[in-house]
Length: 423
Image 1: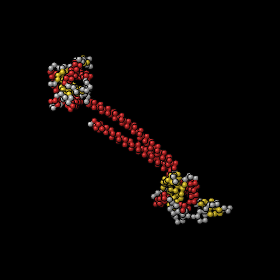
Image 2: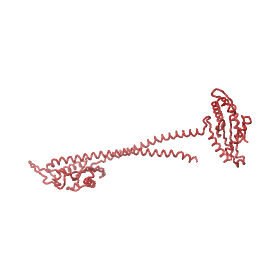
Image 3: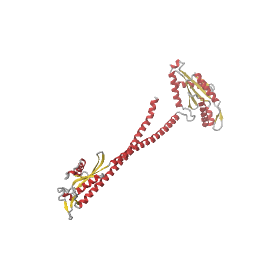
Image 4: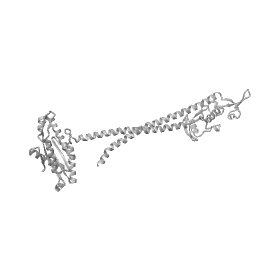
Protein backbone atom coordinates (compact mmCIF):
# COMPACT_ATOMS: atom_id res chain seq x y z
CA UNK A 1 0.00 0.00 0.00
CA UNK A 2 2.80 2.41 0.93
CA UNK A 3 4.62 1.87 -2.39
CA UNK A 4 1.39 2.28 -4.36
CA UNK A 5 0.57 5.47 -2.49
CA UNK A 6 4.07 6.78 -3.15
CA UNK A 7 3.75 6.00 -6.86
CA UNK A 8 0.41 7.79 -7.03
CA UNK A 9 1.94 10.73 -5.24
CA UNK A 10 4.94 10.94 -7.53
CA UNK A 11 3.03 10.39 -10.77
CA UNK A 12 1.87 14.03 -11.11
CA UNK A 13 5.49 15.13 -10.86
CA UNK A 14 6.51 12.55 -13.45
CA UNK A 15 3.77 13.70 -15.82
CA UNK A 16 4.70 17.32 -15.21
CA UNK A 17 8.40 16.63 -15.84
CA UNK A 18 7.67 14.71 -19.06
CA UNK A 19 5.34 17.46 -20.30
CA UNK A 20 7.92 20.12 -19.52
CA UNK A 21 10.62 18.05 -21.21
CA UNK A 22 8.50 17.84 -24.37
CA UNK A 23 7.82 21.59 -24.31
CA UNK A 24 11.53 22.39 -23.89
CA UNK A 25 12.49 19.86 -26.55
CA UNK A 26 9.91 21.33 -28.94
CA UNK A 27 11.05 24.90 -28.21
CA UNK A 28 14.78 24.22 -28.57
CA UNK A 29 14.21 22.02 -31.63
CA UNK A 30 12.10 24.72 -33.29
CA UNK A 31 14.75 27.34 -32.46
CA UNK A 32 17.66 25.38 -33.90
CA UNK A 33 15.63 24.10 -36.83
CA UNK A 34 14.93 27.73 -37.70
CA UNK A 35 18.63 28.55 -37.37
CA UNK A 36 19.54 25.57 -39.55
CA UNK A 37 16.96 26.41 -42.22
CA UNK A 38 17.94 30.09 -42.30
CA UNK A 39 21.63 29.12 -42.51
CA UNK A 40 20.95 26.85 -45.47
CA UNK A 41 18.78 29.48 -47.11
CA UNK A 42 21.52 32.09 -46.70
CA UNK A 43 24.05 29.69 -48.21
CA UNK A 44 21.76 28.85 -51.14
CA UNK A 45 21.02 32.53 -51.64
CA UNK A 46 24.77 33.26 -51.81
CA UNK A 47 25.31 30.48 -54.37
CA UNK A 48 22.34 31.66 -56.41
CA UNK A 49 23.61 35.25 -56.32
CA UNK A 50 27.02 34.09 -57.54
CA UNK A 51 25.44 32.05 -60.36
CA UNK A 52 23.26 34.98 -61.45
CA UNK A 53 26.31 37.23 -61.50
CA UNK A 54 28.15 34.78 -63.77
CA UNK A 55 25.11 34.43 -66.01
CA UNK A 56 24.81 38.21 -66.26
CA UNK A 57 28.50 38.51 -67.19
CA UNK A 58 28.04 35.99 -69.96
CA UNK A 59 24.85 37.56 -71.34
CA UNK A 60 26.41 41.04 -71.18
CA UNK A 61 29.38 39.75 -73.16
CA UNK A 62 26.99 38.23 -75.70
CA UNK A 63 25.03 41.47 -75.88
CA UNK A 64 28.20 43.50 -76.53
CA UNK A 65 29.28 41.14 -79.28
CA UNK A 66 25.77 41.14 -80.77
CA UNK A 67 25.60 44.96 -80.69
CA UNK A 68 28.66 45.14 -82.91
CA UNK A 69 27.41 42.42 -85.25
CA UNK A 70 30.08 40.03 -84.07
CA UNK A 71 33.81 40.61 -83.87
CA UNK A 72 36.56 39.83 -86.33
CA UNK A 73 39.84 38.36 -85.16
CA UNK A 74 42.92 37.41 -87.09
CA UNK A 75 42.71 33.83 -88.22
CA UNK A 76 45.79 32.10 -86.90
CA UNK A 77 47.12 28.67 -87.68
CA UNK A 78 44.75 25.93 -86.54
CA UNK A 79 41.82 28.29 -86.02
CA UNK A 80 38.53 27.02 -87.44
CA UNK A 81 36.04 29.38 -89.04
CA UNK A 82 32.44 29.27 -87.81
CA UNK A 83 30.77 26.73 -90.12
CA UNK A 84 27.28 28.09 -89.32
CA UNK A 85 28.00 31.57 -90.74
CA UNK A 86 27.95 32.59 -94.41
CA UNK A 87 31.30 33.95 -95.52
CA UNK A 88 32.77 34.31 -92.05
CA UNK A 89 36.26 35.17 -93.36
CA UNK A 90 37.51 38.55 -94.64
CA UNK A 91 40.88 39.66 -95.97
CA UNK A 92 42.33 42.84 -94.57
CA UNK A 93 44.14 45.46 -96.70
CA UNK A 94 47.42 44.19 -95.32
CA UNK A 95 46.58 40.71 -96.56
CA UNK A 96 45.78 39.19 -93.13
CA UNK A 97 42.76 36.87 -92.98
CA UNK A 98 40.11 37.82 -90.40
CA UNK A 99 37.36 35.46 -89.24
CA UNK A 100 34.06 36.46 -87.65
CA UNK A 101 33.16 35.39 -84.12
CA UNK A 102 29.42 35.61 -83.45
CA UNK A 103 27.96 35.78 -79.85
CA UNK A 104 27.48 32.01 -79.58
CA UNK A 105 31.05 31.26 -80.63
CA UNK A 106 32.52 33.93 -78.37
CA UNK A 107 30.55 32.52 -75.46
CA UNK A 108 31.71 28.96 -76.12
CA UNK A 109 35.35 29.91 -76.40
CA UNK A 110 35.24 31.97 -73.18
CA UNK A 111 33.61 28.95 -71.51
CA UNK A 112 36.50 26.71 -72.59
CA UNK A 113 39.05 29.16 -71.19
CA UNK A 114 37.18 29.46 -67.85
CA UNK A 115 36.84 25.71 -67.52
CA UNK A 116 40.52 25.13 -68.27
CA UNK A 117 41.41 27.57 -65.48
CA UNK A 118 39.10 25.69 -63.10
CA UNK A 119 37.15 28.82 -62.13
CA UNK A 120 33.72 27.95 -63.47
CA UNK A 121 32.10 26.66 -66.62
CA UNK A 122 29.10 27.49 -68.70
CA UNK A 123 27.34 25.95 -71.62
CA UNK A 124 25.06 27.32 -74.32
CA UNK A 125 22.32 24.84 -74.99
CA UNK A 126 19.08 24.41 -76.86
CA UNK A 127 16.42 21.81 -77.46
CA UNK A 128 17.18 22.15 -81.21
CA UNK A 129 20.87 22.97 -81.38
CA UNK A 130 22.64 23.55 -84.69
CA UNK A 131 25.95 22.70 -83.02
CA UNK A 132 25.98 19.16 -81.52
CA UNK A 133 28.20 20.49 -78.73
CA UNK A 134 25.21 22.56 -77.52
CA UNK A 135 23.01 19.53 -76.90
CA UNK A 136 21.09 19.80 -73.61
CA UNK A 137 21.59 17.31 -70.80
CA UNK A 138 18.77 16.10 -68.52
CA UNK A 139 18.84 19.13 -66.20
CA UNK A 140 19.05 21.61 -69.07
CA UNK A 141 16.32 19.84 -71.02
CA UNK A 142 13.85 20.00 -68.10
CA UNK A 143 14.70 23.67 -67.56
CA UNK A 144 14.28 24.54 -71.25
CA UNK A 145 10.87 22.87 -71.35
CA UNK A 146 9.78 24.97 -68.37
CA UNK A 147 11.18 28.13 -69.99
CA UNK A 148 9.32 27.50 -73.23
CA UNK A 149 6.04 26.95 -71.36
CA UNK A 150 6.66 30.15 -69.43
CA UNK A 151 6.52 28.36 -66.05
CA UNK A 152 9.98 29.46 -64.89
CA UNK A 153 12.61 32.05 -65.74
CA UNK A 154 15.53 30.25 -64.05
CA UNK A 155 16.45 26.85 -62.64
CA UNK A 156 19.22 25.59 -60.37
CA UNK A 157 20.33 22.39 -58.67
CA UNK A 158 23.22 20.88 -56.68
CA UNK A 159 24.73 17.96 -58.52
CA UNK A 160 27.53 15.47 -57.86
CA UNK A 161 30.02 14.86 -60.60
CA UNK A 162 33.27 12.88 -60.49
CA UNK A 163 33.37 12.96 -56.70
CA UNK A 164 32.79 16.72 -56.57
CA UNK A 165 29.66 18.79 -55.90
CA UNK A 166 28.66 21.48 -58.39
CA UNK A 167 26.05 24.21 -58.31
CA UNK A 168 24.27 24.41 -61.64
CA UNK A 169 22.22 27.37 -62.81
CA UNK A 170 20.49 28.09 -66.07
CA UNK A 171 18.29 30.84 -67.48
CA UNK A 172 16.78 31.32 -70.95
CA UNK A 173 18.28 33.12 -73.92
CA UNK A 174 15.79 34.96 -76.10
CA UNK A 175 16.03 35.36 -79.89
CA UNK A 176 17.46 38.72 -80.90
CA UNK A 177 17.93 40.21 -84.37
CA UNK A 178 21.56 39.17 -84.38
CA UNK A 179 20.51 35.54 -83.93
CA UNK A 180 18.63 35.46 -87.25
CA UNK A 181 21.86 35.19 -89.20
CA UNK A 182 22.25 31.60 -87.96
CA UNK A 183 18.61 30.92 -87.11
CA UNK A 184 16.55 32.64 -89.83
CA UNK A 185 13.36 30.73 -89.00
CA UNK A 186 13.23 31.87 -85.35
CA UNK A 187 11.12 34.74 -84.08
CA UNK A 188 12.61 37.64 -82.14
CA UNK A 189 11.65 37.36 -78.42
CA UNK A 190 11.12 33.61 -78.44
CA UNK A 191 13.13 31.29 -76.19
CA UNK A 192 16.04 30.16 -78.33
CA UNK A 193 18.03 28.28 -75.72
CA UNK A 194 19.74 28.81 -72.40
CA UNK A 195 23.06 29.47 -70.77
CA UNK A 196 23.93 26.88 -68.15
CA UNK A 197 26.46 27.94 -65.50
CA UNK A 198 28.21 25.57 -63.11
CA UNK A 199 30.94 25.86 -60.50
CA UNK A 200 32.52 23.67 -57.82
CA UNK A 201 31.01 24.11 -54.32
CA UNK A 202 32.93 21.33 -52.55
CA UNK A 203 34.56 23.70 -50.05
CA UNK A 204 31.25 25.44 -49.49
CA UNK A 205 29.56 22.12 -48.77
CA UNK A 206 32.34 21.20 -46.33
CA UNK A 207 31.85 24.52 -44.54
CA UNK A 208 28.10 23.85 -44.49
CA UNK A 209 28.73 20.41 -42.97
CA UNK A 210 30.92 21.95 -40.25
CA UNK A 211 28.17 24.48 -39.64
CA UNK A 212 25.58 21.71 -39.32
CA UNK A 213 27.78 19.85 -36.82
CA UNK A 214 28.22 23.03 -34.77
CA UNK A 215 24.46 23.61 -34.80
CA UNK A 216 23.87 20.04 -33.58
CA UNK A 217 26.48 20.46 -30.82
CA UNK A 218 24.96 23.78 -29.78
CA UNK A 219 21.50 22.17 -29.84
CA UNK A 220 22.62 19.36 -27.51
CA UNK A 221 24.48 21.75 -25.17
CA UNK A 222 21.57 24.21 -25.08
CA UNK A 223 19.02 21.44 -24.52
CA UNK A 224 21.12 19.88 -21.74
CA UNK A 225 21.64 23.29 -20.11
CA UNK A 226 17.93 24.11 -20.32
CA UNK A 227 16.97 20.73 -18.90
CA UNK A 228 19.56 20.99 -16.13
CA UNK A 229 18.33 24.42 -15.07
CA UNK A 230 14.64 23.55 -15.35
CA UNK A 231 14.88 20.22 -13.55
CA UNK A 232 16.96 21.82 -10.82
CA UNK A 233 14.19 24.39 -10.40
CA UNK A 234 11.61 21.58 -10.45
CA UNK A 235 13.53 19.71 -7.75
CA UNK A 236 13.70 22.86 -5.62
CA UNK A 237 10.00 23.55 -6.22
CA UNK A 238 9.09 19.96 -5.40
CA UNK A 239 11.12 20.10 -2.20
CA UNK A 240 9.42 23.32 -1.13
CA UNK A 241 5.98 21.94 -1.98
CA UNK A 242 6.67 18.73 -0.08
CA UNK A 243 7.83 20.78 2.90
CA UNK A 244 4.67 22.88 2.63
CA UNK A 245 2.53 19.73 2.35
CA UNK A 246 4.29 18.22 5.37
CA UNK A 247 3.67 21.43 7.31
CA UNK A 248 0.01 21.44 6.29
CA UNK A 249 -0.36 17.79 7.28
CA UNK A 250 1.31 18.55 10.59
CA UNK A 251 -0.98 21.53 11.18
CA UNK A 252 -3.98 19.35 10.37
CA UNK A 253 -3.12 16.95 13.21
CA UNK A 254 -1.63 19.45 15.67
CA UNK A 255 -3.43 21.33 18.40
CA UNK A 256 -2.69 25.01 17.78
CA UNK A 257 -2.62 26.01 21.44
CA UNK A 258 -0.51 23.26 23.01
CA UNK A 259 1.46 21.89 20.04
CA UNK A 260 0.31 18.34 20.90
CA UNK A 261 -1.54 16.05 18.52
CA UNK A 262 -5.18 17.05 18.13
CA UNK A 263 -8.33 15.02 18.66
CA UNK A 264 -8.55 13.93 15.03
CA UNK A 265 -5.05 12.43 15.08
CA UNK A 266 -5.37 10.85 18.52
CA UNK A 267 -8.62 9.14 17.50
CA UNK A 268 -6.95 7.67 14.39
CA UNK A 269 -3.94 6.56 16.43
CA UNK A 270 -6.19 5.06 19.11
CA UNK A 271 -8.06 3.03 16.49
CA UNK A 272 -4.89 1.88 14.69
CA UNK A 273 -3.14 0.70 17.87
CA UNK A 274 -6.27 -1.01 19.14
CA UNK A 275 -6.62 -2.95 15.88
CA UNK A 276 -2.95 -3.93 15.96
CA UNK A 277 -3.19 -5.15 19.58
CA UNK A 278 -6.30 -7.19 18.75
CA UNK A 279 -4.68 -8.71 15.65
CA UNK A 280 -1.45 -9.76 17.37
CA UNK A 281 -2.99 -10.53 20.80
CA UNK A 282 -1.06 -7.82 22.65
CA UNK A 283 -2.11 -5.45 25.45
CA UNK A 284 -3.04 -1.79 24.90
CA UNK A 285 -3.96 0.91 27.42
CA UNK A 286 -5.47 4.39 27.36
CA UNK A 287 -4.86 7.11 29.94
CA UNK A 288 -7.38 9.93 29.97
CA UNK A 289 -6.64 12.85 32.31
CA UNK A 290 -8.32 16.14 33.08
CA UNK A 291 -7.03 19.26 34.87
CA UNK A 292 -8.82 19.72 38.21
CA UNK A 293 -10.87 22.88 38.76
CA UNK A 294 -9.72 24.35 35.48
CA UNK A 295 -12.82 26.56 35.27
CA UNK A 296 -11.57 28.48 38.31
CA UNK A 297 -8.40 29.43 36.41
CA UNK A 298 -10.43 30.83 33.50
CA UNK A 299 -12.77 32.64 35.88
CA UNK A 300 -9.94 34.09 37.97
CA UNK A 301 -7.19 34.81 35.41
CA UNK A 302 -9.16 34.90 32.19
CA UNK A 303 -8.77 32.70 29.15
CA UNK A 304 -5.20 33.88 28.61
CA UNK A 305 -4.31 32.47 32.01
CA UNK A 306 -6.16 29.23 31.23
CA UNK A 307 -4.35 28.92 27.88
CA UNK A 308 -0.98 29.37 29.61
CA UNK A 309 -1.80 26.60 32.08
CA UNK A 310 -2.80 24.28 29.21
CA UNK A 311 0.45 24.99 27.37
CA UNK A 312 2.57 24.26 30.44
CA UNK A 313 0.63 21.06 31.25
CA UNK A 314 1.17 19.90 27.65
CA UNK A 315 4.89 20.68 27.84
CA UNK A 316 5.31 18.78 31.12
CA UNK A 317 3.29 15.79 29.87
CA UNK A 318 5.27 15.69 26.62
CA UNK A 319 8.53 15.41 28.57
CA UNK A 320 7.13 12.39 30.45
CA UNK A 321 5.66 10.71 27.36
CA UNK A 322 7.46 7.53 26.29
CA UNK A 323 8.71 7.25 22.71
CA UNK A 324 6.22 4.51 21.77
CA UNK A 325 3.26 6.33 23.34
CA UNK A 326 1.07 8.97 21.70
CA UNK A 327 -0.03 12.03 23.67
CA UNK A 328 -2.70 14.43 22.47
CA UNK A 329 -5.15 17.07 23.59
CA UNK A 330 -8.57 15.48 23.35
CA UNK A 331 -10.55 18.61 23.98
CA UNK A 332 -10.80 21.49 26.49
CA UNK A 333 -8.62 20.53 29.46
CA UNK A 334 -8.72 16.77 28.65
CA UNK A 335 -5.64 14.87 27.43
CA UNK A 336 -5.32 11.29 26.17
CA UNK A 337 -2.28 8.99 26.12
CA UNK A 338 -2.31 5.83 23.96
CA UNK A 339 0.11 3.19 25.31
CA UNK A 340 0.77 0.22 22.97
CA UNK A 341 2.22 -2.99 24.45
CA UNK A 342 1.26 -1.81 27.95
CA UNK A 343 -0.82 -3.81 30.43
CA UNK A 344 -3.03 -2.36 33.19
CA UNK A 345 -0.42 -2.26 35.97
CA UNK A 346 2.18 -0.61 33.79
CA UNK A 347 -0.37 1.93 32.52
CA UNK A 348 -1.41 2.72 36.12
CA UNK A 349 2.25 3.30 37.01
CA UNK A 350 2.71 5.65 34.05
CA UNK A 351 -0.45 7.54 34.94
CA UNK A 352 0.76 7.98 38.51
CA UNK A 353 4.04 9.43 37.23
CA UNK A 354 2.06 11.99 35.20
CA UNK A 355 -0.11 12.83 38.21
CA UNK A 356 2.85 13.24 40.55
CA UNK A 357 4.78 15.43 38.11
CA UNK A 358 1.83 17.73 37.41
CA UNK A 359 1.00 18.14 41.11
CA UNK A 360 4.55 19.35 41.79
CA UNK A 361 4.54 22.00 39.06
CA UNK A 362 4.34 25.74 39.66
CA UNK A 363 2.51 27.33 36.74
CA UNK A 364 3.78 30.85 36.14
CA UNK A 365 1.30 33.03 34.24
CA UNK A 366 2.23 35.99 32.06
CA UNK A 367 0.96 38.31 34.75
CA UNK A 368 3.63 36.93 37.05
CA UNK A 369 1.12 35.03 39.18
CA UNK A 370 2.11 31.47 40.16
CA UNK A 371 -0.57 28.79 40.55
CA UNK A 372 -0.59 25.12 41.50
CA UNK A 373 -2.74 22.64 39.58
CA UNK A 374 -3.55 18.94 39.82
CA UNK A 375 -5.12 16.44 37.44
CA UNK A 376 -7.31 13.35 37.70
CA UNK A 377 -6.58 10.20 35.67
CA UNK A 378 -8.64 7.34 34.29
CA UNK A 379 -6.92 4.18 33.00
CA UNK A 380 -8.38 1.37 30.89
CA UNK A 381 -6.64 -1.64 29.36
CA UNK A 382 -7.45 -4.33 26.82
CA UNK A 383 -5.04 -7.26 27.19
CA UNK A 384 -5.86 -9.50 24.26
CA UNK A 385 -3.01 -11.84 25.06
CA UNK A 386 -4.17 -12.78 28.60
CA UNK A 387 -7.94 -12.46 28.43
CA UNK A 388 -9.36 -15.09 26.06
CA UNK A 389 -12.90 -13.81 26.66
CA UNK A 390 -11.82 -10.31 25.66
CA UNK A 391 -10.45 -11.60 22.37
CA UNK A 392 -13.91 -12.91 21.52
CA UNK A 393 -15.78 -9.80 22.72
CA UNK A 394 -17.12 -6.86 20.73
CA UNK A 395 -14.89 -4.32 22.48
CA UNK A 396 -13.73 -1.51 20.20
CA UNK A 397 -11.30 1.37 20.48
CA UNK A 398 -14.19 3.67 21.27
CA UNK A 399 -15.45 1.25 23.92
CA UNK A 400 -12.01 1.18 25.59
CA UNK A 401 -11.97 4.99 25.56
CA UNK A 402 -15.39 4.99 27.21
CA UNK A 403 -13.97 2.77 29.95
CA UNK A 404 -11.08 5.19 30.52
CA UNK A 405 -13.59 8.05 30.65
CA UNK A 406 -15.62 6.19 33.25
CA UNK A 407 -12.48 5.66 35.37
CA UNK A 408 -11.67 9.38 35.07
CA UNK A 409 -15.17 10.28 36.23
CA UNK A 410 -14.71 8.05 39.25
CA UNK A 411 -11.37 9.75 40.02
CA UNK A 412 -13.19 13.10 40.01
CA UNK A 413 -15.89 11.74 42.35
CA UNK A 414 -13.33 10.26 44.73
CA UNK A 415 -11.56 13.52 45.41
CA UNK A 416 -9.50 14.36 42.31
CA UNK A 417 -5.69 14.33 41.95
CA UNK A 418 -5.78 10.55 41.78
CA UNK A 419 -5.61 7.61 39.37
CA UNK A 420 -8.55 5.25 38.89
CA UNK A 421 -8.59 2.16 36.69
CA UNK A 422 -11.43 0.38 34.90
CA UNK A 423 -13.18 -1.62 36.22
